[in-house]
Amino acid sequence: MAVTIKSAREIELMREAGRLLEIVHDEMGRIIKPGVSTMEINECGDRMIRKLGCVPNFLNYGGFPAAICVSVNEEVVHGIPRRDHILKEGDIVSLDAGLIYKGYHSDAARTHKVGEVSQEVQKLLDVTKQSFFEGIKMARPGNHLYDISNAIDDYVSGFGYGIVQDLVGHGIGTKLHEDPQVPNFRQKKKGMKLIPGMTLAVEPMINLGTWEVVWMEDKWTVITKDHKPSAHYENTILITDGEPELLTLHR
Image 1: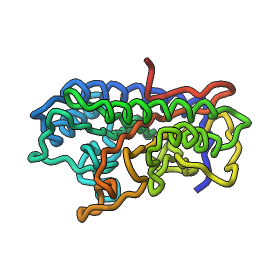
Image 2: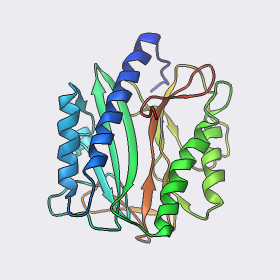
Image 3: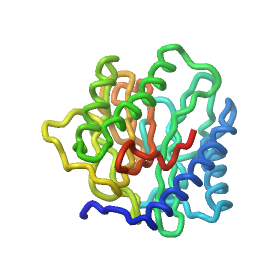
């Protein structure tokens, strides 16, 4: 699949897809507290996506059975929501969500704390979020794709955390996953040159311990090999003539 350069019309549609997804994330974030099930979060997100006149792009994607990926503690990504998976004080929960607006996709992830968490876990959340912003400092025309990857790695490695290598970011547009792949760890090559009109989902997944992960028997849920917590932060971005535009974050 070739990398697509979006037209002005396409960019406007993706801006709206991103704006609407931010509303969905805000709504889900409001209900997170001890005692809430991961299925309730999924239902909240699914309901809001449809209320906004959009379609949840994760539902049935490759057979995934829910609208929202809800991953708790050592679950890195693709956690399947369940009625009997109840959040408790001190947990962290990563919500990966996306929607389709007039044929165009948006994709974003946030990791929330449930009540109060340890200082160690809070630092993991802070570093994961900041690593995204460190990475996109390099998301400018004339730079290369893997400049983003290397900037994320340079920042995170200083804290001794594990950067997930089995899962990466991606291009996005009329499909949820388009070329190119966007790794979050250092690359030996430069990668392609960044061009205005590219749209990318940049999504560092950072583990408190080892970078290694394993897939659960459900063939979806990915967990850390050492069962230590993992955090995830993602936005859909647009390469412009200057600084990148964040399509799924406006404040």
